[in-house]
Length: 325
Image (cartoon, rainbow, N blue to C red; front, side, top):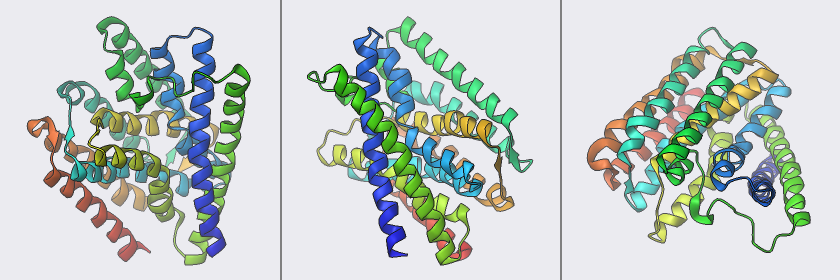
């Protein structure tokens, strides 16, 4: 049991650095070959930030641990809004751009509803996955078109869950082509290895404690894959440099569904537990809906509203531990 916990934490650490290296190497090589920064940000970097969830779910699905994979996505979507936005707002109120609520919020909520609807038959099939990936292609096309025609590339990048602190290119100016290639390869290997450790240890922990995989996916795996983003947001807030955009969270949730669930289900259709449809999906949808009135008020998430979000998250976690374990 202790070894499993240590392997889970080791996997999380490797996963985090794997994503960092992958983005650093891939974006550096792309920019070196003349690909425009906005395109790099909207594609390589944005999708790279979703690779931890993707690899964890991919390995879980291939191993037949479908409930772990699905729980991770639902739990990550809940954590992104209730935990990350809530905790960050408590440290420093989070500003909300009005156009995000008018344009990108409906897209995110629509993706969550589609996610729920395609799960109602108990299976997310390959056809469902193809549909989700097609929606992803359309969404990226929309962002590229909007950024090209409205000169708002940076805000578009923010909405795709890309941190702009490094001006799109997270690689160092001194990185050589060989170093960028090494980061790319090392990051890819790190993601696969970290995801493998996390999935295997999470399954063993679930078996040792006698609880279902969906619960492990909803809690420790989901929170674990959200920890890097939470840490970055909290550090920024503590330093009074919080530039956390609700668009980042919306983009992350949207990519979790369209990219991660879509791609994984094409490779291996996902089974859906009845309890997921009656309990966990409604909680995810409810928190997504709750964000709108909170963010719309003065276009800011205050400390009090952050406390409400965080309390909602802790109540949900308490319910899972007390009533379903």
